[in-house]
Image 1 (cartoon, one colour):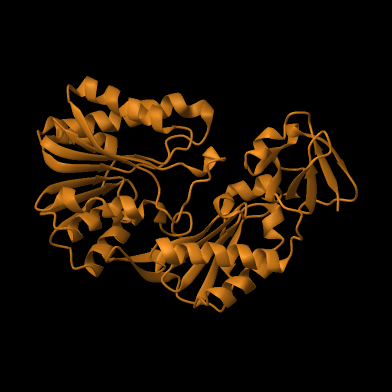
Image 2 (cartoon, helix red, strand yellow):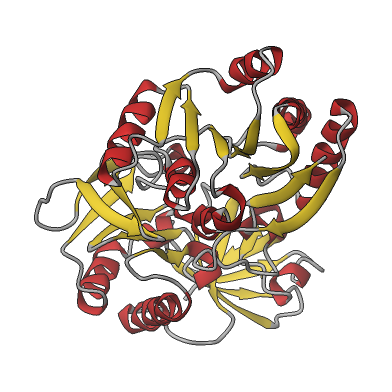
Length: 389
């Protein structure tokens, strides 16, 4: 097996358990090695650090699979997949959950989501993509889904020298899949929906709405296919308005409202949230609870400043239309906006809106998206639940 020697002192991050080794961390690679192969990793003093798969075309050149001297084969993959599935069965509703969360489940760049009896798979790096057939075989044996769909239509694969593609990894099935989350029904489009078809990472934050919304008027901004809005209706809100700029998302959300017999309570509008919040403020509209769950305003460090302005604007506008003592549920999925920065943005928005905030909870992603302490990249969801005065 080929051997990668790290630059002096670059082993510290690996020693602490971070799974990524960048191109600039590697001093030499010796032996016969092809892109996607597993290599042994050593410190500059020739101390064994573990094994990972290697791709010189990627800025993340080695993704660590293990810190042990063990063989990387189908049995290795089976043990990791079984461990991930047993964890989900213990801490999550296995009807709808993320079965494998990449580095956090020690299977870098592998995503597996479960919607009822259908699995959706992403292999986002060359090293894991080479094991795709073995992974599908194991998933069929361990979880026994009705079908598996591949959603590798993501640009990040091109950085690994892989093509974008999607399609069936099993016998064909209807790609509109009915699933349940916290007792709410959703039709998930695993073929054309965003990411793998549905955002499972906010499941527990959506359940946290229950004590906030009963008999109230609720506004759900950036509602996508209606997940927060429908939970609010399910938990007894009197009126819920969901807003999204996508006509397709609004159509899907309305269909999901019908699935849950909530048409008389929950309705959806196609609109620009920034414009609508200003309009509601001008019209003196008031809500008991406002939910902000926008898409990532930045995917790079260089764009953080603009993202900060965007988050501040929507939070400020939302606070102005919340009744005294009402609630703001505000979220960010921008990895480059950390917890401290996000809270500070909300705090500054409250100052400018002349509002006082009381923090009830500060939440993260659901437990089926576990956070690897050694890898800050695995923590990305921020969800603050605040009372507004």
